[in-house]
Length: 142
Image (cartoon, rainbow, N blue to C red; front, side, top):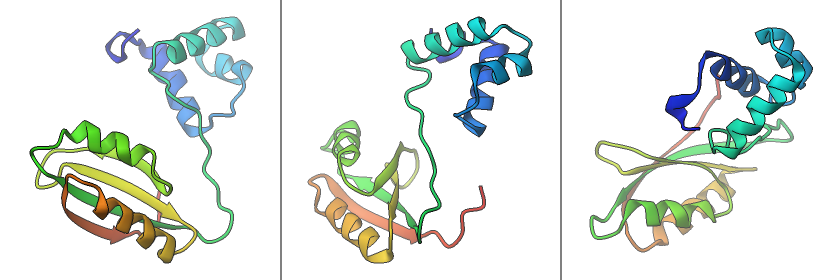
């Protein structure tokens, strides 16, 4: 199953799980008018095919600081290699390969600005990073 082969029911299931990944199969089944077994099978297929890559949680424990760092990758380095190195770094929450002036956007999180700054310093030390532009998130709206 590829992202192009999912149907409207799969899209509805994904939408429900994005909103609350703890929804039971029974609750999802009621929302899309299918049996619990059908939902279980569909979610299993979405996982096996890689459409669903992980289930995660968001926490509101203690103060949380976030930043968005835009990275310019040296043309002699494969962007995917940089992304793979970033995946292993503490504090890196999300990685997006993008178009435009920068090549990669990274969401960095920490318990305070000092932790974010330490992560960004580590990112800047990576071979293949030519430039960074980082902004601190003031408020998360959604």
